[in-house]
Length: 140
Image 1 (spheres, rainbow, N blue to C red):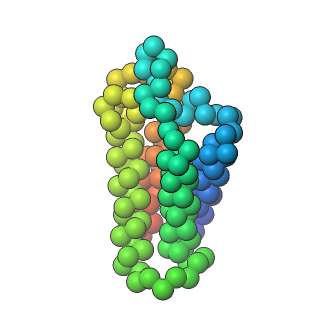
Image 2: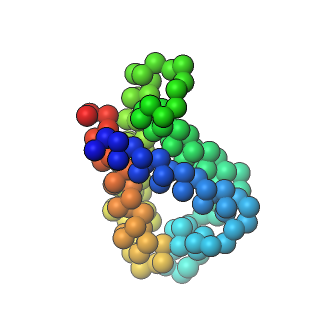
Image 3: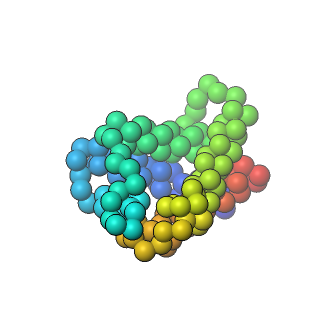
């Protein structure tokens, strides 16, 4: 199971990093459904290209950390630091799954926007999967 979970995590993180790079390059596909909006349709925030690039780099590094954990990539880092990194990824996605008690996560109050529906049926479950998969990998 460890083999499959780490591979799925790697593919998910690489795909998400690629999507963010696509948006950095002014790609428009899927962008409308990925930013939380208020009831009046206004975006809660407008991400900058630099911020989106930083997210892409972070997601790529999450993929690399999973590759290191899986033994696909060798780096001169103590294994305990890799495990700490995996725990950190798990906590990040647990917090994203819980949300901000307003616009994102299972705790959101605004549930009628396009983003909110995608968040309920896709983004939050994906975050829960990433949390659980990283926990299972670390405790295995």
